[in-house]
Image (cartoon, rainbow, N blue to C red; front, side, top):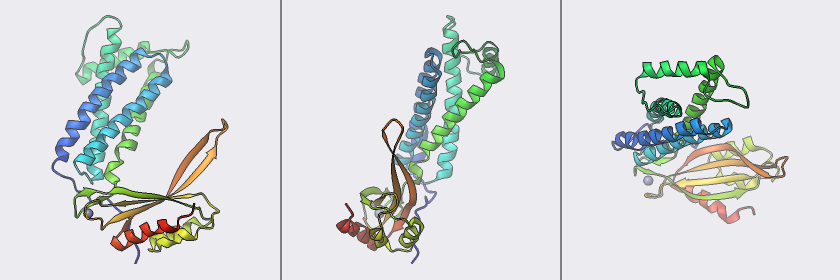
Length: 277
Ligand SMILES: [Zn+2]
C-alpha cells in the first residue's frame, strides 16, 4: 500500500476567530512601536535590518500560537491573516515612526490618516531619514530601501507564521500530534531509492543504509490521545566546517510527515532497537 503525506484538512475551531485578533494584532502593534523607535534612534542600518527580521518573526510566532490554540489547519485562512497582519504591522510602524521621527524635532503629533501619512512620508523622502557614513539616501533610493524593508518584514512574517498550520493534527481526536521520538541513522548513497521504499511502506529500509551519504534524522509524531495515527519525517543532516572553523549544520527534507497507521507507528518505533550508533 502506498502511504500518503499528511495534509492540513482546512478545518479550524470557532476559537480561531478569537485567537487571531486577540493574539496577533496586539503583538503586531507592540512590535511595530518598538521597531519604529529602534529605526529612528539606532544609527546602524544592519541593527535595523536585524530588527526587521525579529519583528517579522515575532508576528509570525504569534500567528503560530493563535493557530495552535485555535486548532487552525487552514493554510489559506492563516495566509490571509498573515497578509492582514503584515499590512497592519507596516501601517502601525509608519504611524509610530513618523511620530518618533518628528518627535526628535520636538513635535508631538500622531498622524493616522493614510493620505496625511503618505504626505509626510513624501516630505521625509525629499530630505532623507538617515545616513550611512556620509551618504544620505533620498527620493527613489530611499523608497527602494523602504520597499526592501517591507519585503523583509512580510517575508519573515510568512516564513515563520506558516509553520503551525502545516503541523500534523489528528482529526479524529481534534488534537495536535506531538513528537514521539527522533532517531539518528547512517546515510545512504541512494537517497531516492530509500525515500521510495519508505513511502511504499517499507520503513525498515532505513536500516539498510550503506553509510555513504549524509547522516539521516528520522522523526516520529503521534496523536497523544488515541496513539493510533502518526507521521514519519526524514531529514538528511549535513555538518560542514566553515572558514572560521565553526561547525554548521544544515538539513534537507527527504520525507515530510508521511502518514502512519497504528501498525506503521509500532514498526517505526521498533526500528529504534537496531539503531545505528
Ligand atoms: Zn487521535
